[in-house]
Length: 406
Image 1 (cartoon, rainbow, N blue to C red):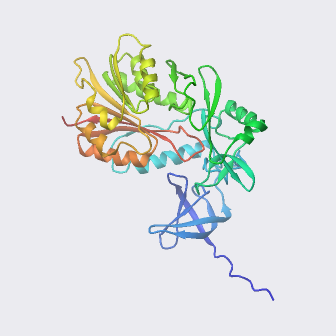
Image 2: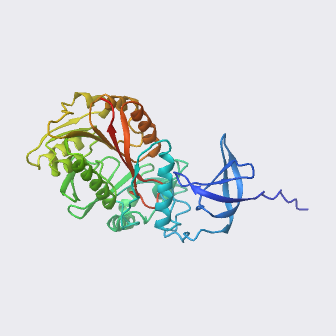
């Protein structure tokens, strides 16, 4: 005799919107929040509740009932398994609109100009860098992105986000039996495309010390970048940010510019190209700081200093003229996802700079920092979303603060 287990209880939910991270939000008959992966705004599905937290429940789709007109078939066969993308199943227009809505959610309580959302033409095959992880399981080697469990790896023979040159190099690597068998469990493989010489390089774990600097193109020239140094991963998105910053330098008559977390000096070099005479920069990575110095030496009629150090600790040691006689001063910060924190935010509040340009890849930590800044002398002037990472949950946030108290 067979005993049937209790059938899974299903609930009908209709989604309202997608929040930052990609989860869709629905509500049950009591108004409680339900978070569901894989749905788009306005879709209806039968779902099973799979988990409960203090302020919401999680559910998984069992059957779609009503689909969004923006839904499309994902270009990647690994979409449901790979942790990299969350929006391959919708149109670029829908993704841009959802991310703009997410930006507005993070701007609640702020009074500022909202810039229209921007994105590049290439919504796929744009990334100039990949960090793959090797993992051996069941006698088989996997090479790709680490999954949400932080243990297993999604094998990625080709990625819809990586530039064609990188995908071609991945194909070569995977067909090289000698190299493939030399991979060890938990090994990292970094693959980069550099536009200056149209070249692809790769290295395992740490970059060799004798690896030459890369050359990267941008709208105002070519910059040198350490092989393991930071550079913007989307060329079109980078140019949108550069144009935003260039416009601020011009309309605000910036004559003293400080670039914190400067990397190879991208924004500092932009300021030099725009004619800003006084430039300061701080970068934690020594090789990137050296590259920033090298890149700034290519510009005439500027005075600059670059410090290799921590932005929060070494900001006060910079000899900055925050009150240039013929213009204004600005500090630009483009921190990691952890944001500024209270230490640097406090120093910026007491610095005397006229304007603060804050570029962020994580709107939650940006909001925390922005609240600190607004409580202590700054006012958010404008904010805009740049879809620097199409197909993924992330975007870049461009914001400008002006000082309202001395």
